[in-house]
Image 1: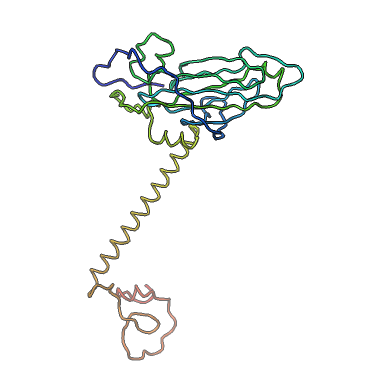
Image 2: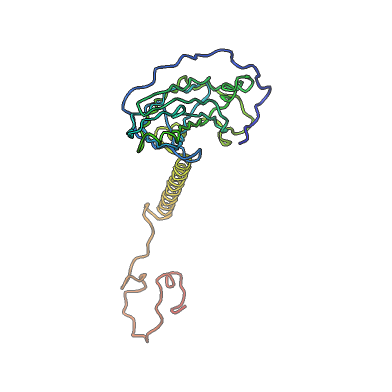
Amino acid sequence: MSEPGVKGTAPTTPPTSWNSASPTPPTGQGQSRKGGTGFNDAPALDAGVWKDQLRPGETRFYRVPLDWGQQLSGSLELANATVTEDSGFAATGLSYELYNTARGRVDSDTSSYDGEQTAMVAGPTAPVTYTNRYNSSTDVSPMQVAGWYYLAVSLHPDVREFTKGDISLTLRLNIDGEPKPGPQYDGDAAAAGFGITDEDREAAEKGETAADSEQSGTMKLVAAAGIGAGTVLLVGLGVWMLVARRRAPGGAPAAAPAGPAGLPHQSQQPRPPQPPTAVVHPQDQRYGQPPGW
């Protein structure tokens, strides 16, 4: 990924303080949201409570939109597992890693697990600020760009030795802080993958992956193109009808009086029989072209 440069002189002084108190995680039963296998198929999560299933040795990925000035925090909970006769203990049974938009690691932590319900707190992160890149702290400097942040949650393979089946995982996420204006980029930062758009927020509400969002955007573009083409067609038909009415006397389209069999009127006198000839289109006669032309 390539972040555009900043117009003018970029600020270089990072913030020295922010609200580091852990907020109360949201409560409730939550919604089901199956994590992906990597960055590319990670479903989007908004603030709230989310449910998934983990099996020993598995890692699930999720993505969360963070705009300028926003912080991420929450808790990870493992439910009681179905324990085998031989009880056990995994010192690093549950773990998580948080990555920024450019896949740079922000934070990580582990917690033990023995098959009984446990929870661990994540965050809060530093607010997303452009000048965090000049902070020497390894868990602050990565919080330097707005965009999608990725949460990877893992269950250690050793947990398999004393449990069986999947184990319920609950994520309780907070996104704190109102979005703030970002730096004045010398280029399209959103097109380069940096920043949060209204479409990204909509994707978080729907739980879309990056591929889902791209397909949804394509369908919207196709629909807009179809509506535009239909509008142009209707306008064209309207103009055509208006011109036709203006050309005809009395506001009605001009038409030649019809004679027998719908042909333009020539004469009311009967015509002598004539040998069969080629079919003559009414338009040919209207423009005075000889039969069979």
